[in-house]
Image (cartoon, rainbow, N blue to C red; front, side, top):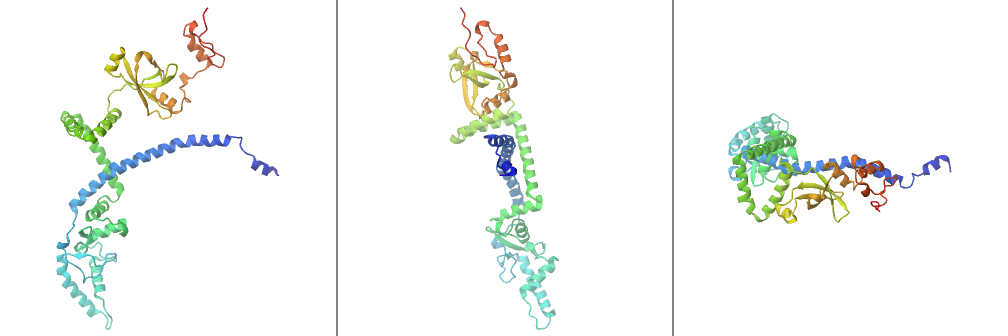
Length: 383
């Protein structure tokens, strides 16, 4: 075997490839997961807030400006030429019907002016006249004179030809909305906002303004009174809604209101039994009945779980049985997420630090400590 072949067959030490892969995974996962969470939140906001508000804006404008007509208001067009992608399914206004004799007269003149022996199709002449009326090579989709007098069937109603053509160019013939008002909503998007991005920006702006004014309303006494009455008189009496609403309100009030909550203290308690210490976050002063029964002040402590500290157990513990720790809430979360691997710098145990910490206690209470910082025995016996 050549030297190059031996070099190719040389492998990494056992377990090294796995460690390298896990190291790369630990570096790449945080930004990837952060991006995934942000995209998930953004998709939720877009689906449940931005799009409904945008649809509401489009529907409001479409309901105001639409020119939807019913079949009884229009006349059939069996004898008129078919339209591209539509055929003869369209209908015309009575005004256009009155102009048909004039158009027939123009058709007769064109027939008379055509070379002898050449057959002239009446439908072809119709299309020629319509094109001349619009001064465009494309069929009369943008004609004010004709396209607004030609109506296309759409979901039980009829919409003008120029509206249908605009929407068809935008979404394609296979994705046309099933209703007339839906077609007008797409038409409004193109004609008034030019794109969905502009409409989404308007929806976001309306959301921010709406939330701001709701907050302003809540700061006023009348607004707070109205909201309180709605919550107590209506929502609190609905069997299913009252349970969901009360739980959601407690969580949102906890996260968003500016009430000062004592959650920054990190403590240690003996849980689940004596001799085993667990980290806890103080969340409040517990309840009066519990403190009365215990005969001393009690505090509420959240015992976070590893590696997901957002879950855990809430304990009511005597204040005298907790130890305050010199670490922040963020450091406590890091400790739980890492399952105890990430220890705050000022809490890391070394032989020197451990001896210094035990040196503050009575000599009779000092345990034996090795040079590596291991506690060998319990407190030395006194004779």
